[in-house]
Length: 152
Image (tube, rainbow, N blue to C red; front, side):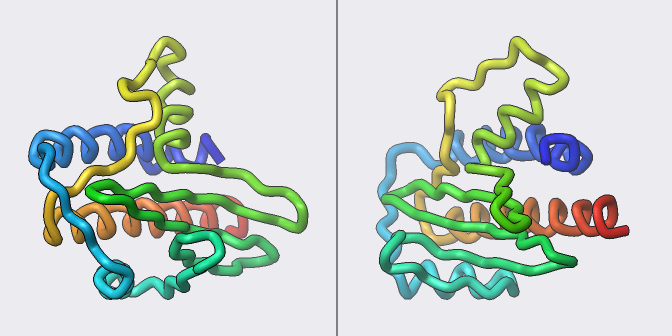
């Protein structure tokens, strides 16, 4: 999983986006409700379903016996995304910050991000859209790379 994420520059892209959003987000608070979040997620073209029990949105695709999943959870002014692949009982993946860190550490073992597990910040509705579009693009690029390299 880390090798495939590295092929799409997952780590570099995540930390570059984080830096650009963090500089602009400041301390403003944006409190999107579930309807706004669902609308923003729908703009990606991916089919997200809200899990009230887990309090997150999930998009899942099945390709050749593998399920590739993206989840999105939101707090005031921050978003956390997860990417994972399942095959039967085997699950690989995790939160975007952890995957990004692992991808960078694969080439630079001394890399230690600060904060250790940064979520993507947003200060307003447009920055929320940017976060979601970015996370969806990472998911789609990973999915395409996974299909090309694994299922060929």
